[in-house]
Figure: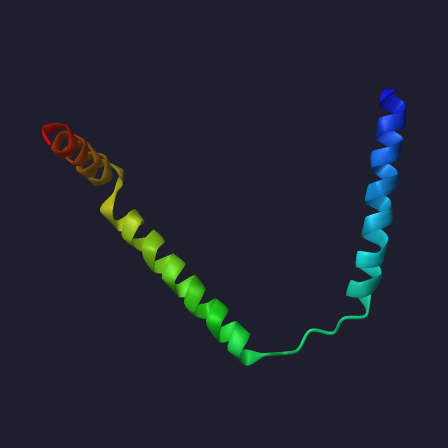
Length: 75
């Protein structure tokens, strides 16, 4: 029973992957600068957020979390 299920699942997956790979092979993506500018801005936002977290340090972040927890318990 398990063998039959494995063979069936494998057959279905292979049958759906082959047409997708054939479609991707013929696709030539455009060299769009607007896309790269957009991805650059996204990366800039992520790096800025990570730099802020790294600059604050783990002790200050845990202290702020403790203060927020105390504040929420008081209300």
